Length: 325
Image (tube, helix red, strand yellow):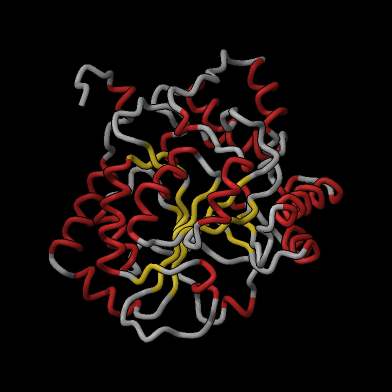
C-alpha cells in the first residue's frame, strides 16, 4: 500500500457511529450469534445489489460508495459460499422451495462497470457462481457516469452530497447530458477516470459473453439511466422499451427483468414497465423477499445494496437478518 497518500485519498475518517457499528458486527459474528440467527433465514431469498469491483492498487476516483475493493469482494464471496446457497436470479424468482437449510442468495450488478465485468469473468465464473448484470445500452461508449464525475469534482472524499444528488435526480431527471452541462457551470469537472474499471463496458462488447456463459444473465437498467420517476409518459416509455428491443435483437431478451435506475419507482413506473413487457423489477433497497412477494408484486422486489465499505462481518450479519431490511 502507498502510505504517502493523503487522508482525502484514503477516504473519510471513521465516525463514532462507524466504530460502534464495527464493534457490533465483530461481537455478533465472532460470538456465533450471527450463525444462530442465520438459522431463522433457512429457505428465505435475498438479492444482493453490487455496482463495481476495483482491481488491486486502483487509484480512488468517483463515488467511492459504489466501488468495492477486490480483496473485500473476495471475502464477501467466502462468507456467501459458507453461509448461503448461491443461485441464479431466475432460480431465486422460482417460488419452488429448495431442500436447503440456508438462505438463497442471487448476485446482481448494476451499470456494467468494467471492474465488475472483470470480477465476474475472473472470480465468479471459475467458482461457478451465477450472476446477473443490468446495463444501459444507450450510455455513451467510453464515458464515465455522471455521479462518478460529480463525486470526484465536488468533494475531497469521493462522496456525493445528498442535496446535489437530489437536484440531479429531480430537476435534471438523472439525465447525463443535463447533469454535466449544469454542473460544468459551477465546477471544473474531472472526467478522467484513472482506470477502465470505472467505465461501463459497451453492451456490444458484452453480448458474446452473455451468449456464451450460462452462468451470466443480462437485464435492463433503462436505456440511458435516467430517473424514470421524473420522466414524461413518452420519455418513460422510450426508456423502458428501447432496452428490450436492443436485447431482443441480440437474442438476450428472454424473461428480461429491470433494475430500476437509482432504485426509483412508483405506481406509474410499475404500470409502464408491465405494459412494456417486463415480468419483474428490482429496487436497490430492502432486504429478504417476504413470503408471497414474488406473486404479489413482482415489479417492486427488494434487494440488499452492498456499499463499498461493508465488511465481511457486516455482510455475515445481514445474512442473519440483522440490518437486511
